[in-house]
Image 1 (cartoon, rainbow, N blue to C red):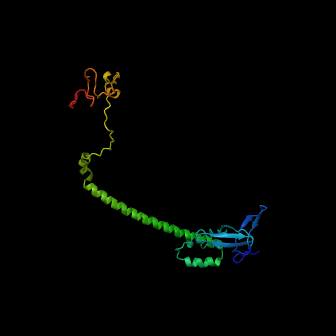
Image 2 (spheres, rainbow, N blue to C red):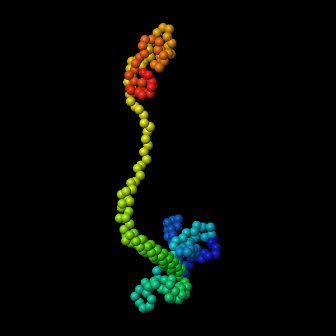
Length: 234
């Protein structure tokens, strides 16, 4: 079934038709039945199908070889591609000749050639603008460096650099503690509780004692100093 408008039946005798050969289900080479051309901004594809509702396949369209190219005879050589340049002085004349040639492959390649020429020209223009900006910034930088050098800024800063010390890193100090090991005397232990004495009063060292003479300690029981000066009697 015909796939619709824009899909001509492939005709090998028609010079504007490009064959699209593929492998069928039996792995045999076969030429597509219906073909068309699909063009985008930069590329042109040759599309083929078997009919309406069938799968469509595409491949980039390129120029097919001409049977007798002019490489050495008189006239324009086929190796001279400058005539296809988008800014060529004979661009309009060349375009009219391309239309009369009626070769879609040549039209596709000329379209690609001009598109990539324009892209390359745009990239080169950007490169020149970036080079110009780079040269401008380098000139300004060189001017500033010359100014600083002529003013001897580095040697002028030397005395200030030597006089100014960098700040010390912050330190975290632990609270000071007295880790002295105190002497323990036998009299510091709780006394034996005699019969009739208050056990709580006898067990405390600072409590009132009811037996014998007052004990004399070698250090103050309040501040733990050997020779205290706090007015507390030993």
